[in-house]
Amino acid sequence: MKLLPLIALALACAPALASDRIDDSWHTSAELGAISTSGNTAGTSVSGKIDARQELDDWSNQYIVAGHFKEDEVSDSEGNRSSARSAERYSLSAKAAYKLVKDNEKLFVLAAHVGDKFGAYTTYTTMAVGRSTRWYQSPAASVDVEIGPGYFSGERATGEPESGFTVRGAAAMRWQVSPSAQFSQVVSVERGTSNIHSIAEAALSTKINGTMQMKAAFSARNDTNVPADKKNTDTQTSLTLVYSF
Image 1 (cartoon, rainbow, N blue to C red):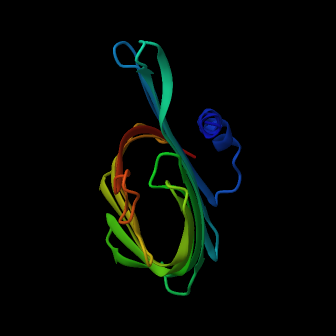
Image 2: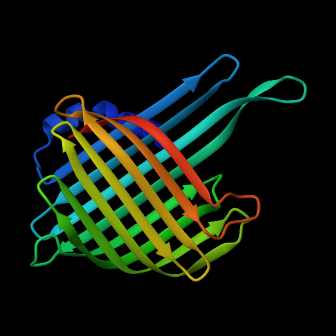
Image 3: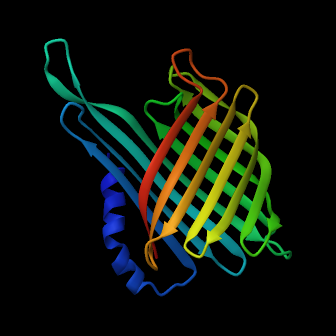
């Protein structure tokens, strides 16, 4: 819950930050989506994300903060109504990539942490190093791939700790469908000795004006080894407003 006011504050302050920004190496986007229902079915769902990228002569850095929560109004056996949390997830990641001599060739270091109160893993922390390259490029599209070793540490929903070495692979595709619309697909897979952890997101963004976009996205997270009372795959469909500065 503490993350949500920060996301809202970032969106509210974005125009002021954009006008005062002097360092053009930073490119930041903040997005927020919310759904509230009342009547026979009552509940609130909020998701937000801040994606900050920095391009320097020798380094390309990226920092991401994201959160999602959902509360539903439920009734007990006596008809009393109360709010119950049904989703609570946040994620933090930072990646630093050193640019090599050849264009779009980089060596990277990645650190990420996920907290998911209702997920198969309540916490999941990973670190990875590797090499990234641009596999395909055209005037309208590009595909970047990366691979390297890593290490993860997490806690399953049963309370059992788990850790080990992994091999991580990822791909990111961007396609400029039209001057005002862009499609993106991001996939990452971490293979360990006891589990394969994968994340995929497909998104279509359309420009409203020079700084505002509407984004429709579908994401899926999968673990091959989960507790008996948990499902392997969690999905999320979202419609958010994005401000870039």
